[in-house]
Length: 472
Image (cartoon, rainbow, N blue to C red; front, side):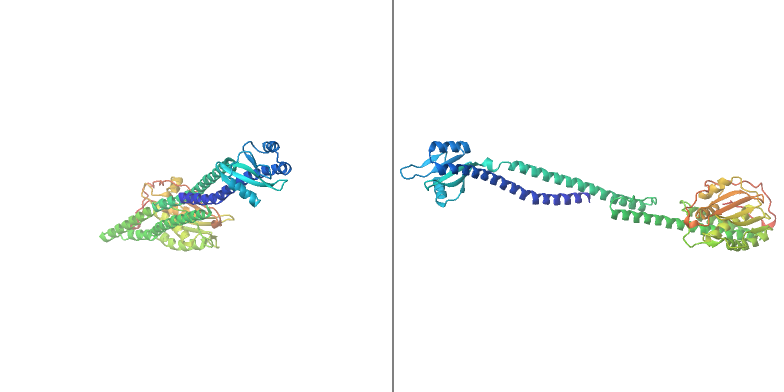
């Protein structure tokens, strides 16, 4: 494209230069010729007054010497009566040309060796016609023409060179953005999803770069959504898996019971594998669209109705507060339910039977706070637990439970904190900004590797014993 633009500009500029320079050069040549013959006519006209007064040779020679050069002018006076013909100065034109001008009575030019001659007829006092001959050398006819043509050629060449330079700069301005667009498309095709194209260059290429970047963002978002969906759906299987483990633990001893518990453990391992595979790539922040949202109180009541049945089986005391009136937040209902299930599932998985827990909802002016607390042994390193949300921990945890909660809070500009609860165990605080879609997602959560505090082998009685797993 770059060289094509240069060639086009060279061709167009050359045609323009030729179209103007050739006629202008011919005009200059004609003007030089007219100037030379105009000077010759003035010299011939200067001799006419003297010829009308006298035909004396000496006087005419002085006039010719004063008007023209020594060999540039000649005067031809015909014979009259007893007077012989008189020729003053060197004659270059032929006698036939002189007689023809005398007979026609008007000026004429003729070519002679080395140039041209102007033959100007002039009437004498006797009525005869004298002819004044003025020599115009070729150098006078072409005087200044070569210089003018050289100047025109230089100007034309400068115009062509300038057009090449301008075309090259325009070509670079167009080619570089197009080349970057090609490179960006190749990088995106090779799997480098972070490839973006600078939005620069002509308007059309800027629009193409904007469209490419938007497409790349959509591709990244779609892939991230698919990974998150696979991971979230897999993690939601942990809720029925928890129930299956509790029921399997109540089957007592025997080959069938052992096979059932082994099958549940195998299923849990497969779910963990799916979660880890889906979470290999860096997750994207989930942004809730306009108009999306749910009632926190309603979702909490619904999920607690499910978990309360399991809590009753394990003699756990449950307390729910702040759900007596609607509390709207800009979070999808399914996402909030998944976050609550992740936290409550952690309570059942990582605290002994009989451990109490509570869910509190606080509705403030600028935030909605959901507290999930328990009376268990707590978490030794809360910051490491939050940091583990980025991947798998060393103890086999997928790290997805707290990451689901963190992403949900950060999508509204809020955050998640882990601390000690008034019940003596762990408290997970979910801070949700009510105006989530209009706020920039926050980044106050911490990421890293989870480290759990040991429980010292707290006994769990009877066949209801739960094989403890890693806390996400």
